[in-house]
Image 1: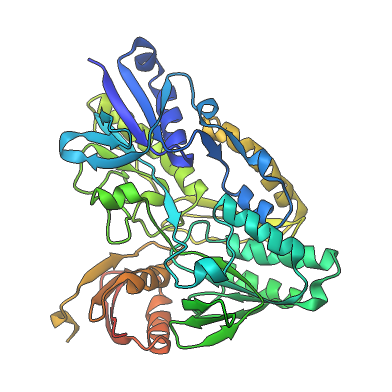
Image 2: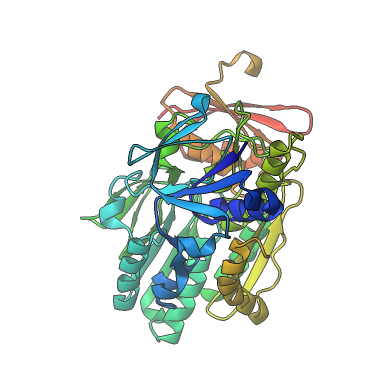
Length: 380
Length: 80
């Protein structure tokens, strides 16, 4: 009898997990004993780290997307029909068209959604770079920037925890190259008492900020924005003015998760930190931003988790116990300007240690921007 | 007595380097109701120093910290 695995979400996590499982169980897929379906709301696959380069006018958007069908291995079927409800008791997903899809195992990779309405005034007052339309608007503001106070604010949680630092380093250097840096004051803010949640990264950033005359404020959590007066008000009771406001919007879980009652109040799914199985559900696995795990919401997290999820689902399909365990591993490049970068790697037990930025890591990051399309296919 | 506090929500942030226990706490405080009591489990040594500092600055109520087997349980009440 044919077994069916449905992957909810056609982003990094869903595609990598589906492709890896197709490789692991290629014979069953070829014989028709295993059916793999990626259920997605978009026929384009966008490489999200490209948004930073687009927003800063360092790249055009065209190079960062591919047709979704082209990133799936043979044997993995795409269904373009957004999921609107998951019914675990019936092992079924309901789609926007009304179609209902049964599953033997469900892999949820619905990601996270920047919530532009979480902070009152954000939509009118702040620019961000977490979606393509927002990045394109910010790109215009960067191109037209004529000097003044640039304030960067950060909502929590948000994906890619190093992106705000990268934005400051890259904008600083772009302004220096265009001769505009003297006209600008760059102010970076952070929710907790240092410049990044990872202490070694915070220490490193503090040294780099001092060299580049980038100012910072900590314990800074924006409660609302007053676009008319060009000020932000914080949870801590402070008011701060700006000329150009860059905001990292707080993220929530996907709507289908909240509507299905699968997540917590913010839509994050309770997930076992080792097996990545959804807590309380024997036939559902979760990976990437969609989990409630207290780890970075980032592509690399989904990348490492996709191996574990694919192996555990393969075990289950063979009637074996799910023995693969995720160790919390994440890897992040950090652009430290326009031609140098560093990187960090860490897991549940090992904190990261950023090295001195250099040109080689920057070039490797640019190379990875192309290699991503291979990693999606489970090759690297 | 911390043991008698009625906790509304507990967050297990043990082993979290990024975003880290305090970011998890801020995230949950934002979506909590006034009056909710939040407990956060942290294996990060800096948490019991940094969290009370932020709680005071943000005018929330720090209830206390329990040191358990290799981790701390830090309790905070949302009051505004």
